Length: 118
Image 1 (cartoon, rainbow, N blue to C red):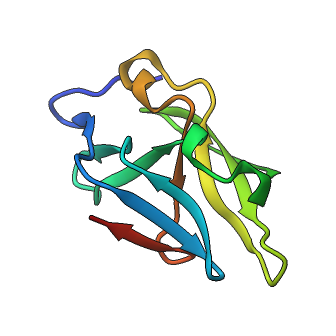
Image 2: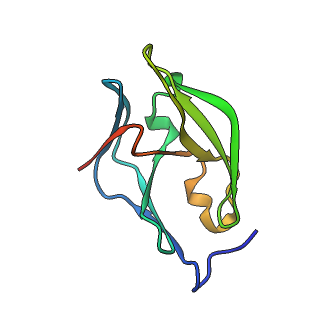
């Protein structure tokens, strides 16, 4: 694992507002407890608590990726009755200690869902 450093900074802070995630007309997440992760030069990513998500609509998949700065990401597909979205959601089940705050949180590919940040 590689830890965040001055050449690859990572910060995690409270989002500070309401986040609503929708797919196929259904609300998947409605929370005021989201986190905003900023990593190096990448666009910020919003992580939402699982406890505020409709986990009954998220199906774990076998897909996984590895980030040297965060750990292994496991993926979920969204199923709402219509056409789903494959591997549209990811989560770090056991993130490295430097980003432990995102444990038990989910992130969504914004091109697969509608996200309202208020």
